[in-house]
Length: 489
Image (cartoon, rainbow, N blue to C red; front, side, top):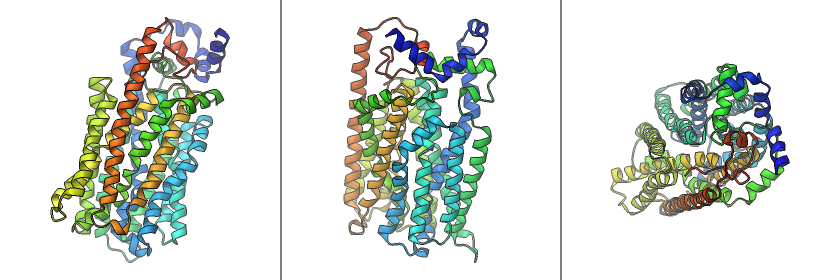
């Protein structure tokens, strides 16, 4: 066992970098709450704004299709309902096929530079999408968007676990995820402006798509110039602060960065039931998210004008920002409450499905309010995404688990668009029934995951032994190998 631990410790690149620092400096360095909080605030100021900006731009680009639908995109490109559904789904096929290659690349390549490259490529795809392409051309552009998007969430989860402790990760994931809501507001206002922009050169949806492409390129450049690839390359930290940053996360049992691919950790991720519980949660949660592409069309079918529909899109963003922010704050305040908070927010999605299928079609306002209730449940997925990261240790195991969960996310998003068939319109009772069932499954899965992890923590408490958490974390042990590891709940 001792030789195994020594091997693990020596394989950790972050440990080797820290160990190469002046030894006397490390011995004299005492990490207290004041210095640790100072470093955390510097990390927040320097990387969170960039992550939030890029995540917002990513969603803005991905959601362009839904907003462009009410700006003349479907008519100008002579698309059938089935073709439009495929344009919404194909992005997730690209994401799914390249999920594992992206995760391997993120582990081997500098994270910030790799993400910047992907963002630049999808910026080109966005610009091309603004042209009057054939259906095959549009499919190709959307596929490329999916391939490149696979680097963002995985990369951000990797960076979040690298710079933040387990207890800090839920709020940070929430902060960059709530930019989806901001992007929805910006997208709606841009669409509103595009409707009033008169030009013989380009249609409103083309201006809308081109502007998004320009924002993407600008964000990619900023990310390339300023985003660090790891703690050791964080330009905004002094050498002493880098040591504090690395030790801060290690003392909380969060693994330091590693560029080594460990096949044993990969196999453990596949054998761990927790991996597949989170993957199932991700699958059921993302089948209903196809409503994002359909929402503008559904609202318009209620009798609202294109202008009103475009402006109503801002409500999506406002609701999402408020609910995600309050959700992560509730978890911070109550502590071990991720499953309970997530499940509580998802009850609104089940209620939404019931109301939309039972309210009379003449009750337009009631139906509209019911539809927007689905935005509240996004908080549950955000908490689940952060939870799987903070509850999985070992660099290869964590990246594998994230890839599986995000692959399930893609499968859900591939399935979802195809439940919106012409024969179900305008009430769409079958899709809404499926939405209600999916969110009900999500609630059950969150509670099952909590129960399982809670029981494992109790078992480990009975077997507790003395050990240095910071040393164990530097060994790049998994959450199963390290019996001192405790799961957040």
